[in-house]
Image 1 (cartoon, rainbow, N blue to C red):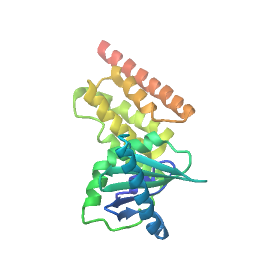
Image 2 (image 1 turned 180 degrees about the vertical axis):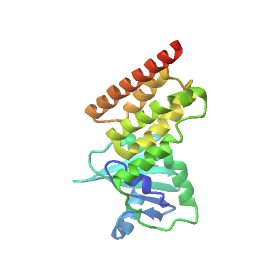
Image 3 (image 1 turned 135 degrees about the horizontal axis):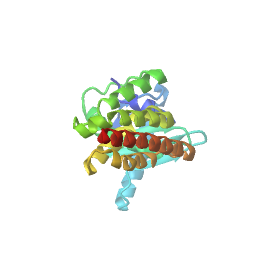
Image 4 (image 1 turned 90 degrees about the horizontal axis):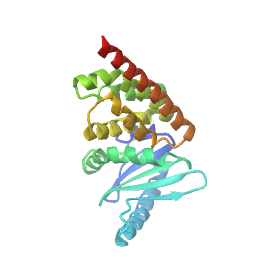
Length: 231
């Protein structure tokens, strides 16, 4: 399994690579860019070190080009993750994906399995289905309350995937974990979860569509619960 495969399906991401101790550990950039990537990584590292010296605490830098953008994320002292993206991207969503994957990226960079292989292309429809199925199997903790919510949560995931594509798996999983840690798993707390998720959807129309659809799903779940309680 290529460590970069999940990032290939994020909206607007063209290529990505993982650099550890000035060595290219994984990449789906064309091979002709390899030397330039290492030089770019050195520049990014110098910029990040300068920011640290100024006590700015930043771990991300970016270079804007005519038709693309180059992003550099410092995962730890020795590891840098670099992406080439389209000019207009959902940076909040990409940042969330990188934070979620940081532990695995660092572990891979430090392992002996850092052979550089192009990430395999996947059909979007197949990819989206696999991501939704994988998330569906992890959205509950097995309690009565979470089991009752499972159908609604699945519908919310599918609604989110319509707005942000396969990246819905990464975004939902992260926010769901935070939501469950902050309080009980219940229908009345679902608006908090969907509001948090919506804040990562940059396009106003898509964000509005998600919130309206989620509200309808939550209202339907509430009505069902009330009906069951009466009977």
